[in-house]
Length: 406
Image (cartoon, rainbow, N blue to C red; front, side):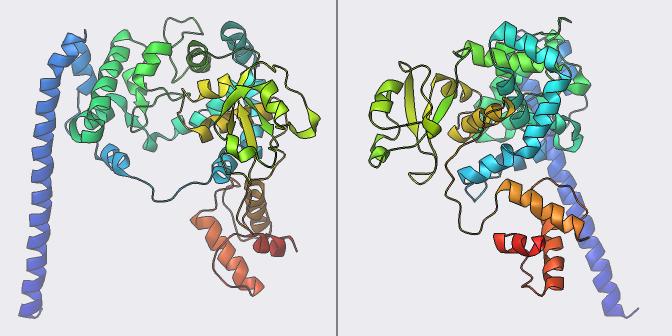
């Protein structure tokens, strides 16, 4: 070995060793600070009735904050999801067919929850789909976090969410102390959303239901408990049994000026806000709010009380509309008649399924038919484009779909 090269290699090794030692020292220092924070926080937990035994059980083996939680908390997407893309990903043939299978499988439970709490089974199925893909996310253990550690991390290391983290951490410790969940199952999202229906700890304590009667409110493993807990949240926030969340309407020429206005349905009807197909309003004296979620060129909706109750689950118009539309689909009703103002040449979710099916049929794609056109699908598109003599941009479009169909 030439002397210069020898010294360069030795120097690189020394730099690597120094980097590793420095990283270890930094992690160790942060671990000590976190341990001190946990020790100090116990006095707050004790004042809320948390025993030393429960506290030690929650943090046994926890030495450092969960850095993945902090990364997820700081991640802010730079793009805006259009309403039609949001709905496509959640209200589609896949979520519908899976929901019907779940309805058949859990019909007895769904009927019992509906009878007890007054929330239509199709709405509960839609929430279950939206929150955890009918429980599928609970099987992805690498995406889950130990709830007390995750919430302690937010309280300790995220100034924006410190108050939220402290409050939810105390609630999670109360759940653990009550014995509702085994510590091995105490998993959730980075922000502490838990179980089949994704409840944060304070909401769980407020609305949790032991539907199966085993003495525990187990939204992680008991589907009856999870669905009843979701229904109870809606019921306690004013859900109107037997009534809908809203109606699609065709607006008159000057109708845009009434956006976000509130009137009773019969007044809306007098102004020319008609339901497609000449359908009537069953409750003409009920209040409704006009929503134009894609502007005047997209579908219009008159939203009822139940729409706003759905927003107590997630305070976003798009979320509540998705639950309502998927719930209607599962109940056998059709979706919006009016089209969303999609960009020219873009694909609907059903089109995306078809692209993947045809790529698979022609031997270019061997992944899942899920409508999510990620890296694997786009590489398959490029390979197809290469064979078909097209520009290899990997972009899914109506033109690509036409060529695939040929």
